[in-house]
Image (cartoon, rainbow, N blue to C red; front, side):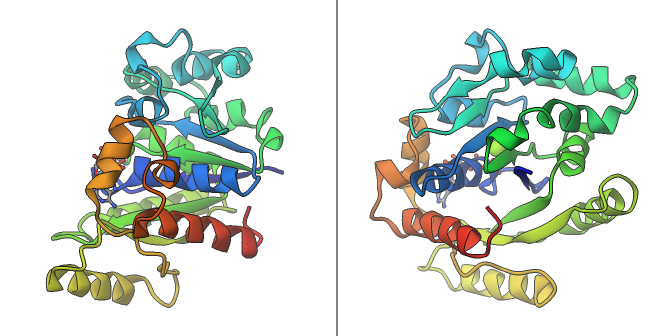
Length: 256
Ligand SMILES: Nc1ncnc2c1ncn2[C@@H]1O[C@H](COP(=O)(O)OP(=O)(O)OP(=O)(O)O)[C@@H](O)[C@H]1O
Ligand SMILES: [Mg+2]
């Protein structure tokens, strides 16, 4: 059965969308069939993939309402993965879902018929622990948690862990935490080094903190603006190598 990973952290701006896209691009480069799901009404992943969220004919909003539309809503990306895009309509889905039957399982229902067409489905989560995130964790096999090596990095992580435990207990006993990916690492400051130590102390040994640290680089924002994956826009920066290494490690471990 096709694997489903959610890239989750309710803290904003920690690199969820960047990790979703670049991990997806690196895995595609290694021959894997990848579906990216934009599960954020901001549509950041959709935009990064080269599509204007406001101009979509169909989006994940339509698929969540009528699963027969899921295939029609899929888009191709320049780097070969498929994308189920999102725009601000998804915020309406969240409200509509509240009153629906099996409201935590809508995303599972639309992914079940298509997940086997892919080696991996990557869900880019929104920065909240609301119903959309609950849907993502109910549908997923594994969670990858990007954490920025910055001030207050671990703030809110408790809430995320509690939610994962609750999902494991009540909705999806198969959900595992794959690991933590440290992002926004800045080698010029001692502070980031200290934060990285703190991240490791918090999670290890129960949860793996990847050695493939994503260094801070302005190239990431430039790549997003030019709607390119970092492995094609600035393939020689450490961050591009790190996403490739992370993809390689997931393949080697048999996760994808
Ligand atoms: N390693 C990095 N170095 C520098 N900038 C980065 C890096 N990774 C991502 N960025 C930039 O930081 C910003 C936030 O990243 P991103 O959108 O991936 O975070 P996010 O967790 O998805 O945010 P949100 O919670 O708003 O969805 C973007 O402008 C992105 O281009
Ligand atoms: Mg995002």
